[in-house]
Length: 258
Image (cartoon, rainbow, N blue to C red):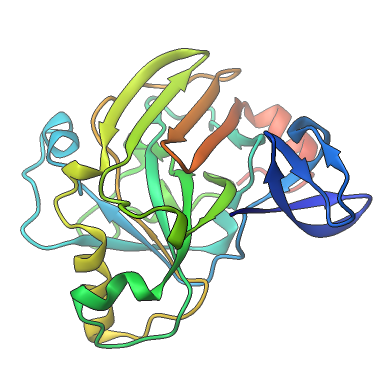
């Protein structure tokens, strides 16, 4: 089953997918373009993996890590399907990152890797945008890069774990204005999902609603204002996002220029 969250008639609803359309709680079917999408879950603690694909590490001229490189993301970073993401005027290289997002559905600590999948609620698609020129230093390498408002579209659907028998064998792809720019498979993760759940739960409790963003393969390209970016994962879904400039972003959100 696929679940999503939308705003419809000024209220938030949990919806399902049926025949390629959105099924409302009253059973009506509407097109996905007719609703406002929210992330399919309300993110709690979010763990993001850096350089979890060897080809991506090589693409950025980094050595593949020997232990997971993990940083945290704030709830402010997440937006839904078909949302807008800002490219700041001073950015020189901003790229998408198609990632499999693992949603925790059961509280646990000291979880064994062989039991890890029992703690997964489901999976969704993330596009964790990065601005390479915002990288700072060893102590704060991803603060500005990965915690900007609305920099991580998530969704549109949460697919139940039972419907994805092998999440370590899924194709990933990204498209910019209809042209495919990224291709990979979760088989190429350096640290797989069971390892990551076991690793994290060694030193902290994992809670319902926590999310693990598992990294991205090679194939990154600079995106410009006006680009439509699609990140897609086999059996999970197709996530659409549009890049906008400062004027459009701040005009819509009516907040200070920060």
